[in-house]
Length: 357
Ligand code: ADP
Ligand code: GN1
Ligand code: MG
Image 1 (tube, rainbow, N blue to C red):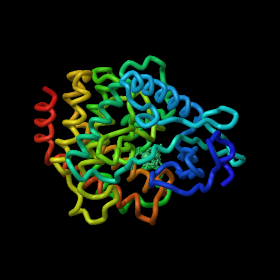
Image 2 (cartoon, rainbow, N blue to C red):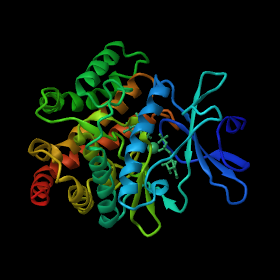
Image 3 (cartoon, protein in one colour):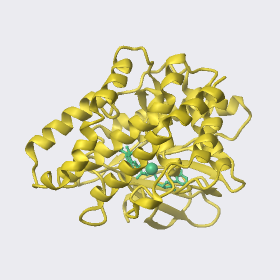
């Protein structure tokens, strides 16, 4: 692959090969010879990120802020935060002849990106990682560009939904009437909470917005090291970070599990993540944020159902899919997960109240 020569990699590149299983970007591992560092190289998804240079500026601002904090704490800024590797002409990304944007960062060695949280201890570490990440960014003054307008904005999502359902471009709508009704039954409640963000009752802060477990690197000893995949760092509500993590960590099955009996909320994992998160975050959270923390898991899972189902109805233009009905399988698994969250809501709420004291 020729793209490597445009980046200021140390040493000689031996091989560049596909890596990881994100749903948005194309990720490659850059292996260098000898003791030189290895790298991650990504073709950023230009259909989703319409201003990739602005996105990279955001990432640079955030990682610079994080690194200053990490150095002040006496820790290693190259392991505890992402390090963007510039191009040979010192830009944060390279645009190729097809118009695609590429960006690179240091590969953080001896780490694990888990695909699932299989113990409350690991969930605790993940929660601590997200709490620390938000805490370190809480005093960031430099404003971030809004590179994904409407990303977790439910007013915008329902507008998109109404539009795509109105068009039904590939004729899939009739067969998913039951799933559509499931979303519609929740619209008012979700909008009621979103309005509190719009009115400022629930504040906005610098947040990650894609807190699934494989966007955190853990040490081999099981401690959280570094939050990665910073493409979606934005000014938003922390409820999105907490809720999305709970959606992902607590699920006993996979995000695209076909056997729905395997999909439900694991309350011990909920407790582990929430304990870790609040151990860092309760110092800066407002009462309104704490009040809606448990509901945010339901909120974000409804949003995820809507996004997978809307993409299915739209003909699979957004998420990478591996087979024809993949987005529908994802939709059904997320519905099952959300049903289980709704059943456990009172317990979740009581646990948050206890742990936030
Ligand atoms: P996507 O946006 O497609 O999800 P990510 O940035 O999350 O892409 O990268 C995909 C995977 O690559 C991660 O889940 C992780 O396993 C690995 N990865 C990404 N960046 C690094 C890094 N700096 N060091 C080590 N592994 C990384
Ligand atoms: C995408 O990039 P990745 O795979 O970590 C998506 C998230 C979804 C998630 C569902 C920019 O995350 O919002 O929740 O898939 N990212 C973007 O797995 O849309
Ligand atoms: Mg990712």
